[in-house]
Amino acid sequence: MTRGGWMSLMLCCGALTVEAAEPAVADCDFRLECQVGAHVFSLVFDSASGECIEDDMRAFVETSRGKAELPMEKAWYGPIFNAADGKSVCRLAGAKDSGGVSVFAVDAHRALAFFTQDDRPGYEWVGVALIDAATGKVLDVKSRLGQSKERVIAILKTPRGFKLQLIREHLKEVRCDCSAAFADAWMGVEVANGRIQARWMQ
Image (cartoon, rainbow, N blue to C red):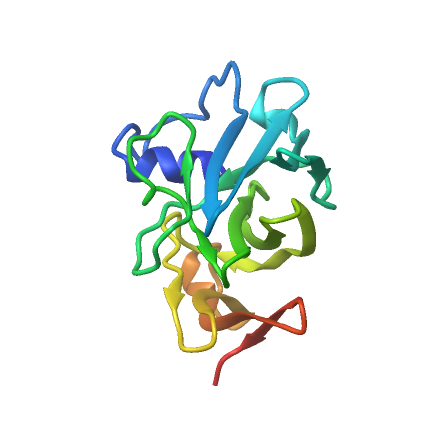
């Protein structure tokens, strides 16, 4: 049902159609080049095989001080196209502008990086990592905030952080293998006491 976050980005950019088959990807690695305040870092998603469908990608933060791995399982990860009102502090390596991905500053040295994890044949998981751009440390990760029915995920700015719509409930009374059987709700994501706080909004 889903083709992963990498496909989400390409679809939003008009490179693929909905009917496109699973991509024949020779190298599915991608790099996000980022800057928060005066601090420059990169988020690197690397597949050992070079093929997304092998679900063997690992994620790293790179700075001039070194390299740190995000504590997540090997999987097929992808960036989230920035379709909403937040200003991204990163861009895909080689891209001309910084609006293509969803990585947002928390303050002058920390950033929240949102990403997807493929769960074919089901819906994609959405995750988020808290990065200290000054040190390159991964401060916190929630790799499975919830699943999204849509390939385009709008992450909206709030007074305390961000919010996005994710699947909250499986409606067992709906007797079809379709999106109508899953109810969405707003999830709020913020940083408190140096950790990611995620909660369903009322």
